Image 1 (cartoon, one colour):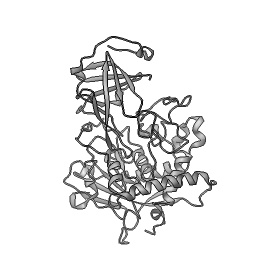
Image 2: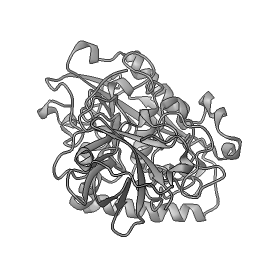
Image 3: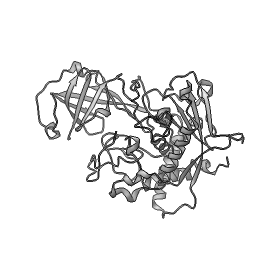
Image 4: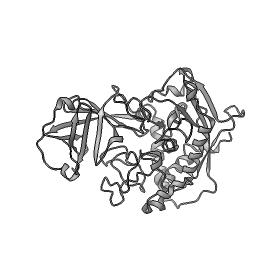
Length: 118
Length: 305
């Protein structure tokens, strides 16, 4: 599934995601972002140096662990709750608003997310 | 394009910054006092400094092979960039969008390679250490310990210590905020993201990684406030709130966190864009750095070294 028009990203769809493909750790390949889409590759993929990258680990149902650039540029770990509903990935932090992403593309070597408005 | 391993997840990874906050009460106290001092400075009448802060720098080159033993020219190219960026004499500041041009600020900070070592002997301000370590980890500060294969800092109250090396973890560098342990104070930069010549490699070959890290060293935060849900702050009011780091070379305006019409100030040195896409500090960032230099980092520019 692929979408070019961001306005379509908020449309309700009923695509079901293969959660076995999704259940792994992904690293943000920000060099490949395009048209509002954030592209992730399986953790361990060779990528060039970066000021910092986000890692999300979806291998545990409902509990996301990850890394994000910290205040001093070294990675910090974080924990979130996550759920999947059709093709919408919901990520929620304690005491923070929920973030929703449409899964635009999912393959063994790529996860592409489009941020949905809250 | 260089290929490196992506950051590897480690169980129990804890941010060094937060670890220091817990382990060193003085670190937390210093940062808190600095926030109070910044508020006070904001309330006081602005004043122009008579002369710039001048900071002695020592660059510690750690190398595993001769190629990594970077040249004096590469090091000097980095010092030149720091001086241009912190004095706002960088030519690319003209690319600042018109709406923010009035915020571009000369922080009045200058950098010079130390001419004397800690014992008062003549020095180039550069140390060179061959190490058996092929790439230094980013969370153990081994690079800052001679007995572990790194290089001890020169007295951090008198010198800005910059370690340059091969880094694991896929990042370009890291810094220590003011008030932390003195032995580890300074910044660490990947040797391919240092300066503008030699090993420096695009898109990080304009010396802006050191500009960014020294910004942290002088207590600047990322413009997105280190959260990715618009709830964070960089404690500076003239940088718009931003949702998260920007990468590459964005097109103005890039709106997030209801910060339209002008959007994120992604051209600020404290964002994550490519070197060629960042070219400004703001007035409030300058104020924040100067509060730091008048406070916990005062001995740096008062040193007679």
